[in-house]
Length: 268
Ligand code: BGC
Image 1 (cartoon, rainbow, N blue to C red):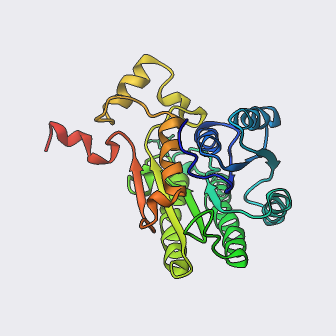
Image 2: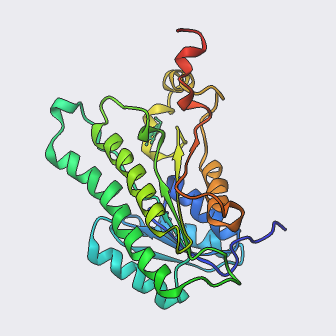
Image 3: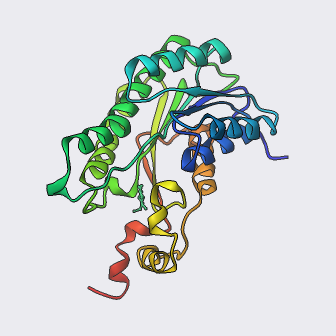
């Protein structure tokens, strides 16, 4: 059996009822963590993730909370602490897209994406840091006082026409993550980002569900395959564990080479 690197640690994974969040929650559970499976809609899906994690012998709990709402985030942390005593790992994953041509983008489309993707990460990270500082380091569990993993995207560096709200939220996450990492490094709180490329999940179905779409997507990916949530789960376990103790403020791209300007493989 694989070593349980996160044994007795408690993780909150936001947006964990599907897609990348689900893959990360399952991977952390497999690594021995107690996992809070956060969701907004579809409690059945969240409960299925909980059951899967329990099947590895880890503890898990589904908690409904909209990460863009301060009172709901505070309540989720209170419920987590009540159940598992503390929080060691936050995976700021919840995110969505509301795509539109820029000149047609409504304020509501802009605001909704910024609220969930960026303000949601602020609210959850703030509660996590408060709890990390209150508790301090527990050497039997981890050499760190706490770990935050922000789910960013290749679009924190690749501009994305038709997605100004989404790309802006991911650019914002970069500076949010780096600033928190700088601010609390001395207290041994590690903060890093995962920057996925195209991962096969409900958020980007249109990019892979027909052969035409898939083939045109492959032109953007040197490795010539779409990623899967398990790819991201493995990286999340690494960043949450002491194996990555000297990594802080980093953005790790996990994209099959999408950020390598694939057009230049032949052009230029
Ligand atoms: C987006 C996906 C997209 C991928 C690569 C992600 O951040 O959410 O829709 O397929 O970036 O462009």
